[in-house]
Length: 289
Image 1: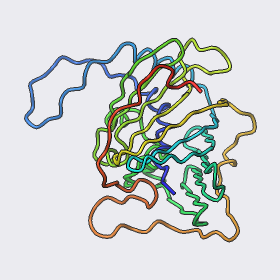
Image 2 (image 1 turned 120 degrees about the vertical axis):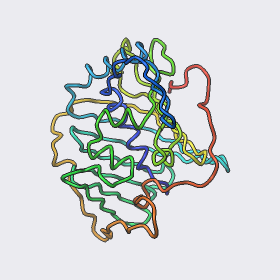
Image 3 (image 1 turned 90 degrees about the vertical axis):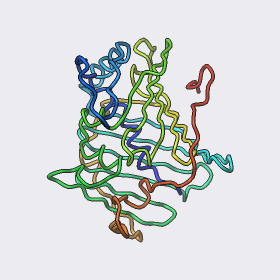
Image 4 (image 1 turned 180 degrees about the horizontal axis):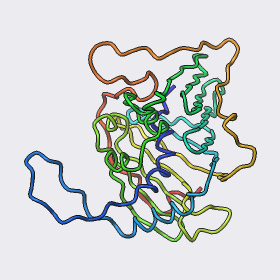
């Protein structure tokens, strides 16, 4: 079974990216030896879409979607197919479940109740608890999912990720997201979102994700197709996101790392070692079902 810690964060990253308003453009100053290159000027089209998303989602309390997931191994070209769903609620509550379409015992689930993240692994019958620091929830996790669900700020996202507008058409807006920091580059090389455009017709909802394509450092890819999206479902309360014990399953804590280096929770983004690939599959209608 393969980890989904990063991909859960990637699904939720759209909302965070939309809240990250482009900074004001300052006049260039003197070059500083060894300093990173200055950020490019803000793209007015991207800014318009981010503003549209923010206006659409600012009053949303919860969000639910079903999805189809295809994971493709780079070396053997093997596809594994999954079904699942994700439910999120402000400010930092989430549930995600992924089930192999051919093996119902091969499934993964995550629950974040704002105080801890619980990782359920069906094949191992284990539940791993990752506690969040109440005073500094994102401190020391060194994991994208933990950082995001712990309350990553929009300004931090702009420093950690390069967000650009890849293209747009009458139905979709495509956002391209690349990591800047080495710890995030260990988890993914590129994420490309297709959001429903501002003029899309019902039942699609403007600026909600239609599809996500993700490239990992080892060249493996994931293709997520979203459907049956709903916002502000009635009856969704914090109680929905509380820990659920399963009889006969082992509850455990993550083991500390051996030797120097940042702590990366097992099963939530351990650095791959194989060379990566590049590029998004081209062609019109890429997000159509």
